[in-house]
Image (cartoon, rainbow over the protein chains, first blue to last red):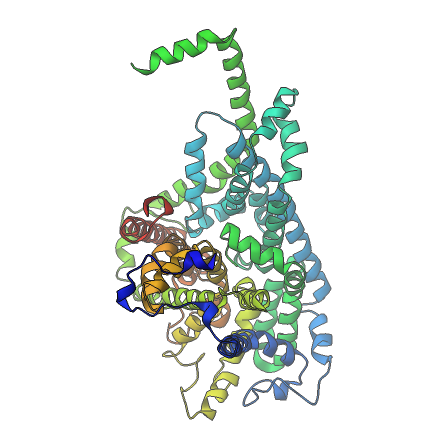
Length: 305
Length: 317
């Protein structure tokens, strides 16, 4: 292999010193590796600092959070902030907000997985008139700023008396409104061999059987990515609940957090940060458990964070 | 004309070609529309319908309580005399113009750093990606506000080096750099996509270039950049569209007001305030349509110019 790569064919008189990584000394290699790790670790520290600062601050007394205190370490670590944060706000406990967020997120996952997989099957595996036109429209909605639709949507839900319910927040998930996930599943299904459905068809299986017993089983990776991302996006969603929910009892965590900030302002910094940590906790846990899936999902499907 | 004989010959070969095939086709069409039903319903009820009515509303005065009143182009003409609107355009444009390229540059640089096979690559990749996942959350907006607060940790940390910026959150001159830092900090998502793209570039291209004596700069411009251009194009398009729609952090950091001195009055925040605080739904719809038009034009420009700088693997050989 190496002999193949030597530049025997290139002009020998040109005296061009060529770069061959194999010719590097062990020392040079080690130095390069050290530099790489120093740079990468420094970058890690910078990137992770805000998160670490948040976690560290949530355990600190108020006096040590703001101002000159850049240090992550404190001698007065305590859980007091979390105790205050768990009390909740406006007479509603934080546990209630958690439950609300969980209901919305699980509803979002169920709706998205169901509707996106079914629709994607139609796009990827069934031939019918108008398919490519619809597919183009679906792709176009990826680029559509959602602000164009939120005002009429709000008006309709308001007239139907559905404001302050979870319906406006969930109905889109059951109608495959997140084109990203439909697209992701279409791409995934297109890569599955066509012989599979052909064989099933010869055996007399219809589309329902092919979808239910072959496709769903094979597209597990795409379903997992979709579930993870729709859970996290729903968990972090702020604008939807801000528009549609009025009663604190129904608030999910991000909205409760805003209410908390509004009412406490900077008077209880520690509790505010502790509540921020609580609101991010499931996402952080998800990330630690599924980071492989998440990062790989992004690189193969081009999802955003 | 040339196709008809082959077609008829093919149908003549099979025993009962037409009825069976057309029956299958009919069944497929029915199945296709049935499976597509959720998306179709959503597309009509949640996208097309609302788009048409928002276009209509943008020519009206509508406050949610009285019927819409047709006013023609008034909303659009008023917009360009509305100082807060113009300010929100300025804020958003400077965020997109400075934030997006910086974020993509950071993403590409770090992707190239991580592209070599080294220990811990997976760890770094995950660590750098993490902010992208949580960056738009209310929690991070609160953390950012606290960290960049006037006389907060970042300010104090910089004063150690003798840098005194006079605060970030309360200083109209520094709010934009703060938001740009927030978006650059989330370089992980485009970075992961860049990394996947870099892995597709055949190593022998670099080897051949090395033999020809190309240095790292030439290798970057002659190999990495053209080979990666489809991925750069994708990231540029998505990040630009994404950046126009920043809302959560703007709302939280400015207490939903866009202050100080309107320096954080992002377009979507102003749209929200007009629509859902002042109940000027027609005005807000006009803003939404302007945004749609601008994003549409930008997408078109990016697509058009991409022909001159995006190389797909098909046309390199």
